[in-house]
Length: 417
Image 1 (tube, rainbow, N blue to C red):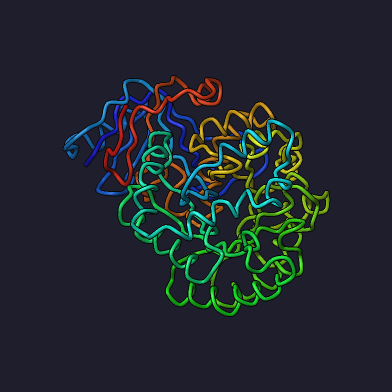
Image 2 (cartoon, rainbow, N blue to C red):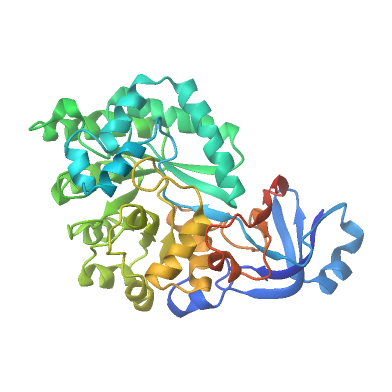
């Protein structure tokens, strides 16, 4: 057995028996001081006060990790990324600084379609190799579980290529990866300006059945936004995905109030993401549903927008809220989830405890893994981060700092500073 010993502050996120937490419960993170954790193989056996743990398990311990009176937490979970891509878009970053909007850049061949061109020309091995370093960077930021979307292929061949790359990465990287099919990320050039319906037919009749039959994705996502896929389009695609056994996700109400949240809830989506333009009715529906609201404040920050998702309203209403990097080459080129936690505190007024809930147990819920990861809970995988910090409040407080000391994934030490 492995002993994680001399923990100064243990943030368990186990206040709801390892399940997602809402509303005021997000301020009850389950903190134990002077504590220890026992791990057997891949899973957590027990945790609690150090003296009690040593008394009950002392003679069974074969190895130990000394936390040196530091903060120990669940490994972070990033429930929304586009981590497989080729090339960077710093030129577009400069264009935005000079006044061009994200949609203006996209409409002139930039944005997502810029990355699509490069991904289409690439082979699987190149995409795998270019992606590996990004997952190492994620691990150094304490991220032990990550969702990864396709969406830079936008053809049957290239979308399947991306999903096969993600499948290969699941065997190569230490994190658990949850794959999501995002063929409806943008309308490819060959279907512009007036053949969108044909592309949607291809998604529904060719891509989704192959993705489902080959079990290449757990979820299907759609970028529901003005100028891309409207509510009717999104409903058709997600209904087909559901009929093929895929879980549902949505890029919803990011820039324009499209009614995406309402659609997502009505279809039983696991999450609706972004939500900068969510309606008051959408907030009410989320609070009454099992659909998670995933905040992506790094995107709002990096695009220089002013309107963040109404976090305080959503938390106050009782919605399940989660937090993600939206790591991608255009609108959020960062794997630093702790930095995203800082932005959520400063710009969306979440408390430090709330961002921890949003980046661990609720993030795990947003990708359907809440019974495996996301909290220090008996029987869950031992995905654990040890920090160069005294308490959980210091992580969002020291914004942008690299504070991870040790990362343990399924009971094995995989990274240390």
